Amino acid sequence: MGNEVNRAALARLNLGKQMSPRQKLQLTGCGVFLIAALVFSIGSGFGFLIGRMTSLGETAASPVIAAETDRALAPDDLGIFWEAMELLEEDFYGELPTPNQRSYGAIRGVLDTLDDQNTGFLTPMEATSFMESIEGSFEGIGALVEWAEEEGAVRIIEPFEDQPAWNAGIRRGDLIIAINGQEVAELSNLNEAINRIKGPKGTEVNLTVRRDGLDDPLEFPVTRDQIDIPVVKSELYGDNDEFAYVALQRFSADAGAKLRAELETVLTDETKGLIFDLRSNPGGLLREAIKVTSVFLEDERVLIERFSDGTEEIYNTEGNALVPDDLPLVVLVNQGSASASEIVAGALQDVGRAPLVGVTTFGKGSVQLPHTLSDESLLRVTIALWYTPADRSINDTGLEPDIEVERTNEQIENEEDPQLDRALELLRTGD
Image 1: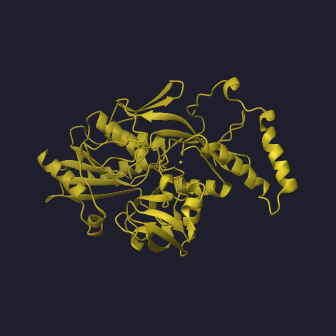
Image 2: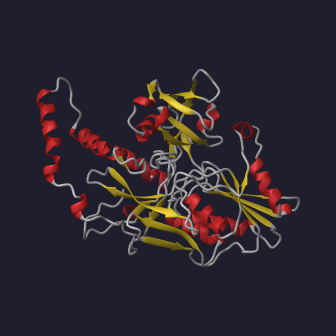
Image 3: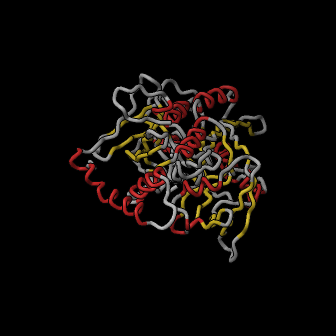
């Protein structure tokens, strides 16, 4: 999905071959290259990745495929490629890449012509990291990033508080221009940059950063660590604990059930309002976005998935809502809210269930279908765009908050939270 992402051991489509739940994961991506993009804390940095995973026996929505006459690639069409490879093997003075490296390079070369950073290719090692981002914890620096090609850099969208990048001094908006002395501008894509940044716990990576307002670059040695972000956390506010607060950190497996269970413990008859925090949540599984929305809404549309030929897949809430529809609700969002987060926030905003407080969200509104290739590498293909219930596209634009409130790096460092304060004021006064 949501999104999980700026701006992603799945299905190999062999007819007659049964696919496991892992193989049926579909990503409805995130801008941050989702896989690319974005979350060093989410393993390979798939950033705003959002996925759709079905269990055995369920049927995932199928992409619309154009007629072979329009798009098919015949063996003869690759004649020039093989001709060039033969000449390289015969004439090149030096060591040639391995066959796998040449195949991967050719695939990436084709993908580079698509002008779609969310359609991407992952090596077997990168694909394994991607699965870690969905299924477990990971080791890295703990930051949400995007590919800033025009800057020759990797842009920090959101460094997670109390994680290695933040603790080292890296802040939102910083541009990573070199990794251990290697200029990012010389790298081919975000995945390559992410693979250089991440690494085993306890090892160090030196990041050269360009910061707005400073003439000279900054150097940050960052010690990588195990990144474990809790799925759900909650607190109570007010003189009599009458305002409940719950934050959802990511849309991993069982996120909907965990959110529902947490709310069952914090909501009481005395609760006068609820704050739902989706800030810096990069997304995850589409099915969990549906379940999370269903905690707040009943018998409502969640999103529209639209393919290139105009056909649509409609997703609605499931089961009974837990949160009473007369309990005041406010949703917190920021530039790190992506993919699945935007699906949920957009649905709640469209039906008038909750105002959004914060700043404009990331803007990841496309759907990726991943395919595991024969060597366990992964091809992730954009197959559709998604729209909010009111038929709004947020791809590349994001969701605008109903009440705009900034939160600066300095305020974060000082543990000040004007966005949360404004949400509490709204619950207390209605204004």
